[in-house]
Structures are given as structure tokens and as C-alpha cells.
Image 1 (cartoon, protein in one colour):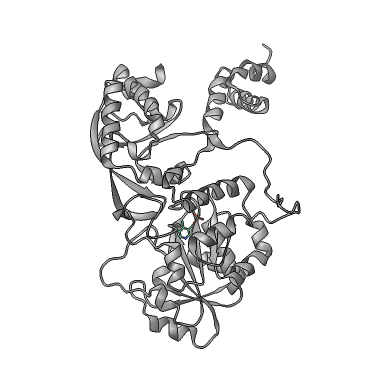
Image 2: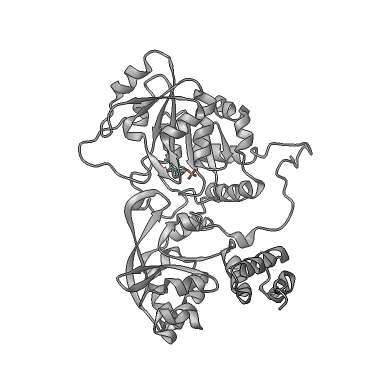
Length: 429
Ligand SMILES: *Cc1c(COP(=O)(O)O)cnc(C)c1O
């Protein structure tokens, strides 16, 4: 018998819509596994793994596996962009120019620079201001964020020399004063405990206190809440934000530079921001490392759009804040409508979470729909994929993280659970 032709098999699955080289890969993988007839399912898995939009019904607002803050990928127009052209002068401009002043305005500070992520922002700041010099940090702040971000290692990579002061649970101003000792330390660094809490016999030094030490104060606030007063939401700041440091207030308290992520509580694309005193931001921008860490035009465009929404105090235009700000009554109403439309499930009160290593352990009151059985596998196979939670043999759809425009998709998926009865049956259909 002739060995099956890779090309013929690849063409037989052309209807999957994969680029031909990927269809060839699927055919090769199937043949290599001795099951050429399975090429279609290999191809389907390849297509399935591609980046695509997903309905997040977990109630985790900043879901690390789902790209943290929600964006509107469908709205990105396919066009060239004036990434480095100054449309006013016609000259080559800086890709940072449009966003730096917007951030400076929102934070009431001099200037800001955008890089790829929060880790890069801190690495750049330390490299620019403290390479080969001493940086004083409380032992309580020597944290690990996840995804390989460990503070001592970032400091090491920047060439700064870590000087630890205080103890895990208590550090005082005098500890910093002794370590800075005149002017030999390049900087003092404070890092927000984004993903854990210390309780009990604890003491830490505030930013305002650090500002009296007489050294450059760098604060990694992590999640990028822009302003503690949240003027972009109607009404007072949500109670679940309590304790989360805000960039504007941290600078007002005396930080010389703050660093934070773009895709946590800022609600923008993956990015990192360094903001503060002009000459320090300028020192960061001058470093060759800044070129290596610079963001692409797509990111800058999305970030600019997010910042313009903040400047208009329009929280509804920022998907994260729109979801975070929905009232419990509205969510319960949507859940009831969903149950009616699907003829399945029951309305439940749930606890959503900020997620993404922000605001640890704080529940955000929420509501959704629950059905019997663990349907997560079937829901991931749904088109569009739906990611839900399972608890004690039940599946829970938390509506806080679902765009109301997707309620119809959820109702259709929910209706299927009644037809199939048993989650295990789903693969056969
Ligand atoms: C999340 C976080 C980082 C890392 O930011 P990325 O954008 O994930 O690189 C650094 N520091 C703190 C305090 C954080 O919370």
C-alpha cells in the first residue's frame, strides 16, 4: 500500500481554515503517530489552541490565564498606524510621545514611559538609577509575584546591589535611615504585596516616611490603580479596593518614581509603566535597555485609548471597570433572564475576585447561574469557548466577568446541558 501523502491529507482538511503549512503539520503529526485518519482531529486541536476570544464566566476579573484585563480585540482596525510619525511636524517622532503626557496628566506628575510589562518597568528603573549601587529594601518586601518575578532576582539582573533591612514582619524608618547613611545608597525601594497579606505583629514604613530618608524613592505598586478616588466610576470607590495603593497618591506622598502593570487594575493591554520625576524618567528612556523593552504599536494604541477614557472619567469605556462596577441587582436580573431563556439552571449569589495577583482574598459580591454536573470540558469546546467554575459537583457561571452582549451565547450553552444530562456525553455529539 502507498504511504498516505502528507499533502493529500493536508488538503483533505482544508475546510478547517488552517494556513496550509499548519494543515501539513497536522497531517505529519497524525502520520507520525501512526493514525493518518486522525489528521482532522490534530488540525482541530491546532485551531483550537490559537488565540481567540473566550467568554470568562469564572468571576475572576483579572484572570491570568485569560490575559488579565479584558480588551476589545474585535475593534482593532486593520490599518497602518502613526507609531513613530509625528503627524503635526511630519518628522519621525517618539512612539512614547502620545502616551507619556497622558499618563503624566492623570497622575499629576512630570512624565512617564511605557515598556512591555511591570517586571520590565522595575528592571528598567533599577538599571537606570541604581546599577552598580546600593538599593535598600525591607525584608518584608522581598516578594515573589508569580511567573518567575522574584524581587532579589530582578534587582540582581539590574546590576543593583540589594541591601536588606528590617525583618520579614517589621521594618522601621530607622532601619532605612541607618542603611542609607549619608548618600551612598542610590535608592530606597518599596514593593506592594500584591498577592498576599501579612497580619498580626507587623510594621512597615510608609512612602511619606521613606521620602524623608534623603534617597531616591522607587515604589513598585504592582496593579496600576491610577487614582484612589476612582473618579471614572459613579459613586464612591468600591470597598474591595481598600488597601490597594494608587499611582497618583503614591507620587503625591513623595515617591520619585512609581512602576506598575498596564493590564491589572489599569484595565489596559499588557504593558509596564514608569512614571514620576522628569529627569528620572529621562534616565530610564536613555538606557539601551529601554529600546529592548519597548512596546509595539498595537499595545500603545490600546493603552492610549484606555488613558483617554480615564481622562474623560468614562469608566464604562474600560471593560475591566465596566464589569467591576456592575450592580449586584443588575447581575441578578441578568441571571434570572438567562435561566428563563435557557430553561435550565438556577440563579445564585457568588463571590467574584479581582484576580491577577491584585487585592488578594477580597471577595466582590456577584451573581450568576448554576447547573448540576461539572460541564467545564464541554464549555471549553463550545464556540466561543466558555471558561466557568466548578464547585462540589456543580458548574457556576459568574456573570460579573461576562459582557452582557454574550448572555445569549451563555443561554445557548446552558440549554445544551439539559439536553445532554451527563457532561461525559458531550464528546460524542
Ligand atoms: C504584577 C506585579 C509585577 C509584575 O508585573 P507584570 O506586568 O506581570 O510583569 C511586579 N510587581 C508587583 C508588585 C506586581 O503586583
